[in-house]
Structure formats: C-alpha cells, structure tokens
Amino acid sequence: MQKHLHIVAFDVPYPADYGGVIDIFHKLRWLKKLNVSITLHCFQYGREQQAILNEWCDKVYYYKRSKYKNPFIGNVPYIVSTRSNDELLENLCKDSFPIIFEGIHCTYFLTHKKLKNRIKIVRNHNVEHDYYKSLELIETNFFKKYFFRNESDLLKQYEKVLKHAQQILAISPSDHEYLQKNYQHSVLVPAFHANDSINIKPGKGSFLLYHGNLSVGENNHAALFLVNQVFSKISYPVIIAGNKPSPELVNACKPYSHIQLISNWDNEEIMNAVSEAHINVLPTFQGTGIKLKLLNALFVGKFCLVNKLMVENTGLERACIVTQNAEEMIKEIHLLWNKIFDEDAIAERKKGLMQGPFDNEYNTQTILALI
Image (tube, rainbow, N blue to C red; front, side, top):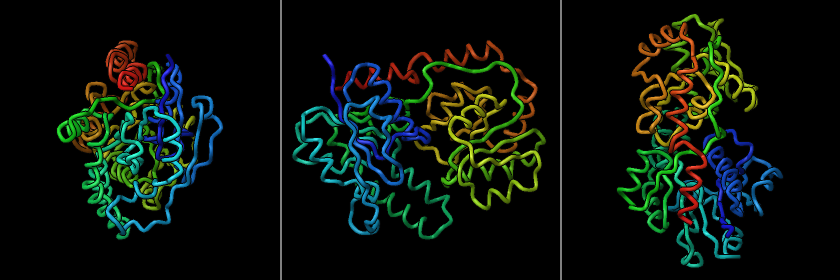
C-alpha cells in the first residue's frame, strides 16, 4: 500500500546547492523512488517556485516567509516565528498523513491542538542553539553578532518543543547522542546527498580545492584561515570556489599567483572541480551537524584533508586525513601531492561509505519504518 507524507521545508529545496536543502531534495528523490506520495510545503524568501519539484511530489505549496518581524520581540526564535503561516496549518489539516518538519525552523505548529493526533517527525539539521552560538563567535558585525546571541538563547529555551514530536531524525552521531539524552526518541539518519554510488576518478589531480558558500561567515573564516596559514606557505596550484567572497578574502588571495579565487561557478562546475582536485581541503571551525560538502567530496573526490572538528563524531573520520592545525595540514599536503589515488583507495572508500549510514536507500527505509 502506498504511503503518504507531508514534508515542511524551511526553504525551496531546489536547486540543491547548500547543506540543508541538499538533504531535503535528495530525501524527496528517494522517497519518490520507494513509492511514497509526498505533499511538500516550502517557505519562500529569495528562491523562486520550482516546477521540477512536481516530478517528486504530488502537491507543492509555497508560503511567503514573514521576514518583516522584529527578531528581538517575543520568546519564539526568529527562524521559527517567520515561518508561522496559517495557510500551512490549514493545508496540513486536509488529511491525517504523517508530517516531517524539516528543522526546528518549521515547528511553529508542532504543538497545535489540530495536529494532536498526527505522527509528527522533526528532522534536526543541527543542534540549532549551538549552531547560532558558533555563528556569534565568528561574526564581526555588531548587529549580526547580537542577533546570533539572542537567537541562540531563544532556541535553547524553545528546543523543548521537540518533546511533542513522536520521532526526531538526528543528522550526526553527536547530535543523536544529545537529542536522545534530552528527548529520548531520536533516530540517527545521516544526511541525504546526491551520490547513490562512489564515482571517483583514479589517478592524480593538478590542484588543491576549498569550496563553500563564501557569503556564510563560517566558510569565509575557513577560507581566510587556509589562505593566511596554509595555502600561502605552499606553491601547489590552489582553487577557492564559492559565491560572494568577502573583500577581506579577495584581498588575502591577491598576493599569491598560485591561489585562484572563483566566485561564478555553478553547482555542476564546483562538483566537477571536487572530482578533478587532487586534494579537497575542508576545515571547519563550527562543528555542529554534518557538512554535506564533505560527503560529496568523499563520494566523488580523491584525497580529503580536514581538521578534527570537521569529522569528529560523524563516522567519516577513517575516510579522511585528519589534522590538528595548519602545520600538520601543510605537512600532509606535501606528503599527498605525489601520491596516486588508486583503485585500492577507491575500494576502501566504497567499503566505508556504501555499507550502512551514508547509503540513501538505507536511510529512506529507516524513515519509512517510522511512518
């Protein structure tokens, strides 16, 4: 018998070009593959309606996100209060099918009496109050810093709403441990992603790559760290790819002819670079959730060089070269530059990624067992 499901998305999940929407889009794709009828609800704030979503969903509803609200009034986090559209509640009440709320962002109606007898599942993309606290720590703009601090405090209090969900889908082992300890009904379902198989080209690449949305403070911080403390100390060709690089990052790259900063590649061009690079260098200084760009690099790229925070408690540690600081990164780059990523390395990568938690089909079956 065909199963039916509502999915409430915090953003329009196409194009699938950043962390959270990558998880949502490929979840839709796999649920459709396994014959689930999906009613998708999307909040819009900058992205257009996407007809392609009708290929995976029976119905798609769009709602304007109410971004005019004052983020410093009330006790509901801004990311939640701006997604409080009454039309969403009305559409959810048209039937009695289970609901997945994508992120705590979408949980405004989780406790509503009209949904009292429904199966309600919350997909946690991060422990959000930790995520916003980390954004505060790296932010330099005073207003943004204050917003992140306030939002973190509100989210920490609001998070108790999760006890009203029948299940919570944690995205990483560390998040699962935290959510299980506090709410007792967490299930580990790692991130969905574009890769249904390992597709790595054996051999040697000709450059190092760092990629990410450079308008995000976390990624800008990582890119500046790499330029100033790692890439400026080596002579191998380097590409940094991502949209909207900060003036500070642009200026940091200028003195170095071997560092190329590219801000106009689309998702396909970036994925091609991930595949062609000899080493994907992916540090982070914000260790919540799991980084989808790391998963992509492991499925299609050769060597992956990371810092401990990028992989700690993710289950991906053995697939990467893990370093503690800039000096260790430089040392490993020199060691890896003349190594070939051969068929044995590809076989080892397959063994680590395609047997269990990072298999999209396996994770879809886990969700289906809950509904």
